[in-house]
Image 1 (tube, rainbow, N blue to C red):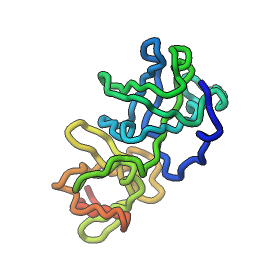
Image 2: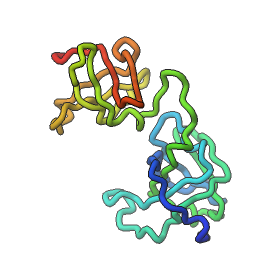
Image 3: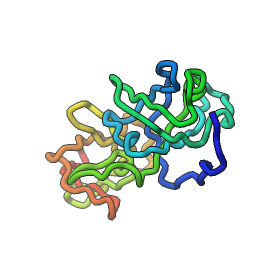
Image 4: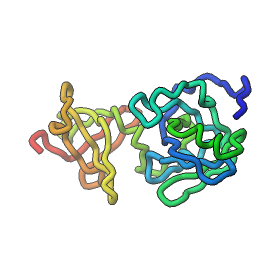
Length: 194
């Protein structure tokens, strides 16, 4: 894999982790990516994927950052079952693709496809304050759960660290009155005692 200095742009402040490279696919340099979203459009929207080494506790813990290129120029990407398979410039064979195994894939948030009305990326909801119709604070969104038919907000009050003490609020119109990204607030039909 070749890497030129021109490809070493500064890390974007809005880089979001969207997947992980799990293995090579075929013999011509293609590789498999496990996307963190059931709809991996963020991977398809950017032709430049930023890479970081595997997490310290991952299967390739201890792999030096110098073994990974900081940037992949994506030539092709497509859905293949539950995964995405991709081909990058300068990754020309199976050993090159295998060398990417465990790499964490990031893309700039600015390159995500535009959402429709009442559609939101999870990354935009995490950290938003959650208040009910009476203006009472329920906490903030610390994560989401994908249940298949809909997502569920994981809301924690200040100081709550246990998942057991989080509120789980279905992200459906019956309970979500308004989402204001500029005000960083979600208004819900949910009581303090629920």
